Length: 111
Image 1 (cartoon, rainbow, N blue to C red):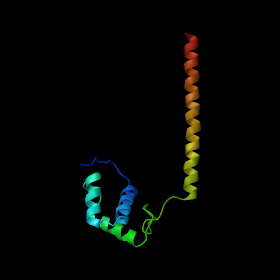
Image 2: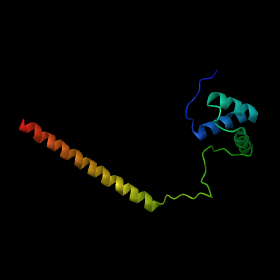
Image 3: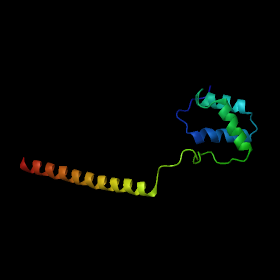
Image 4: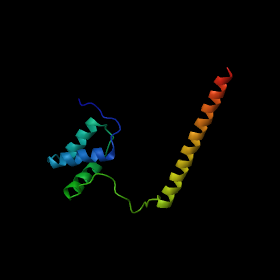
């Protein structure tokens, strides 16, 4: 029995499907093998068949593409705002650390 692999990424599973398909393994056998190695409910056989078909049709990438029905909410403006907040948070954290260090130094000097 194969050792189970926990929490595989989607692209890892798709890469295995693509590899086995290139070796002319049938979709049902690919499903059986990935279910054995990963877990039984890792991917439905129908989805394995879809990825096999996509691979045969020339799809070479295994990562998710951008979805038309679900546009990205990330904009350059949002990235800059978040980056600015992290920079302020980092600076604030450093100042708080410095203040606590100075308080400890004063405390030990009083002893």
